[in-house]
Image (cartoon, rainbow, N blue to C red; front, side, top):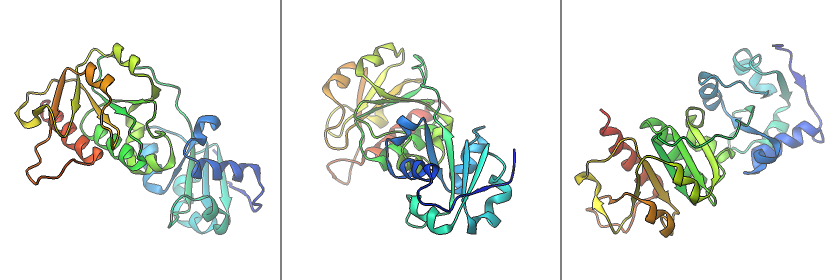
Length: 257
């Protein structure tokens, strides 16, 4: 691949407009068929997983630091004046390195795989954090039901810290799709169910994590094999869904070691 970048200096350049949409619109990737990753950490995480970007985007001031490493990994490399790069960046302190990847083909649900089900989890930071925990604790598949934050949005990608590239991700699923799962579904609630540390958790399984305010839907509760709760001796009403996910997924992981 060529290391010669294409310099873009016009704010009206069509590619620059597309990059701005991908960076700043959480669902633009669905129409474009590709997504935006910003920063060297996420970029390296993708490359280590065998991903190859379609486009590398560098600010002029970042070429010396990143040009040798990222300038030849994509079919096309674009160089922007710093001000233009900062105008498309979604970060308060831009790293001035961005990568555009083709969106993976739509995944099909695998019936017997350790999974996480996201039931209308709407905060991008929570979703990304849950993906990171899923990858860390051996869960290979994430099934996002309709109403969940867009999985490939820039904010979810940043919060996931590279977890996306090691997971099978299914978006926009209907609850009926869960009928295909052959692993038991476990739900967690602040107020009902057996204490998690008293349970012998099944493996593999599918953990269902619900909306930040409403929790897991009644329809999904009805599909559950087991309902558990996390002990909270400090007396708070509930835990953040991403924090609860980390506790639950870690408890499952302990059953495998």
